[in-house]
Amino acid sequence: MIKAQTYLMENAEEEKRLEMKTDPDAVREQAMWFGMGPGARILDVGCGPGKTTALLHDLAQPRGLAVGVDISENRIHYARAFYGKGYNIAYHVRDVRLPMKDLGQFDFIWVRFLLEYYLEGALEIVKNIAANLKPGGRLCLLDLDHNCLSHWAMPPAMEAVVMKAMMYAQDNFNFDLYAGRKLYAHLYDLGFEDIKLNIMPHHLIYGELQPADEFNWLKKLEVGVVKAPEIFIGYPGGSRQFLEDFKIFFRDPRRFTYSPLILCQGRKPLQGHVKTIRKDI
Ligand SMILES: C[S@@+](CC[C@H](N)C(=O)[O-])C[C@H]1O[C@@H](n2cnc3c(N)ncnc32)[C@H](O)[C@@H]1O
Image (cartoon, rainbow, N blue to C red):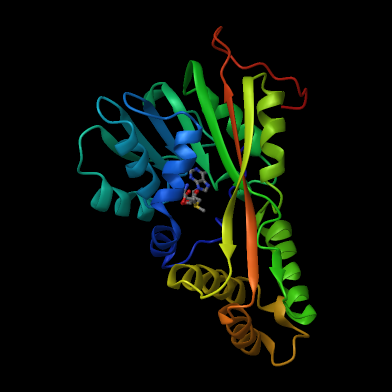
């Protein structure tokens, strides 16, 4: 039985946040590492507003295609409006915890920043979507590790609130702070072959603050204020003062913030089915 789950970052501007924070050059670099190129059939799982799908689609030309799926009707509506007009690109509302047999099979399945929302259930998702991979196709997993937790020199009282917020997300929204380090084990446990790993910086913020970074991080905090006001209890001046102090910290060109992105790829066995080394799924 699949448990209902609220997407932690759901908010009225989530399409805009994802749109702004998606760096096309970074997506292309990541896709090249996975070996994507002309002619590839690519499934983008948890595609958000569709920007990544469109970038992968462009890399797959000529002759390739890209399909994006997301559970959010709003994001798929946005994706179709902004990125869905081209040839061989399509977007569908889907819950990736359920079978998607009708979409067919792909050479590459790309899963970026989705598994972090499934502290419980990530391996089951990977197993489910592997059914949409051709034998010999590559599963491409990308996720953050030590998510949102690495900043210097953040005042200790502020750091304590950030840690409390992340623990709240973990305990109440099934959020996984360490999704990145688990990717290799998912593919290993499912019997994937030729598994490769890479690490790239995701947030690498120093010097002048860029508008996209400011919008992304302040939006995360605003979502925290709305969804978990109790995490600010005990902070002098409460959530309002915390937001002001965070802005001062974050706009200071001396601060350094980073999050490592783990990239993991594996080949589906040619006999076409994934085995399960772990016995509990
Ligand atoms: C942080 S966004 C990542 C978007 C995009 N992959 C990227 O790299 O920017 C996570 C997306 O996963 C979607 N999502 C969460 N659970 C899902 C599920 N069970 N099935 C399909 N999409 C899901 C959310 O709606 C959201 O758009």
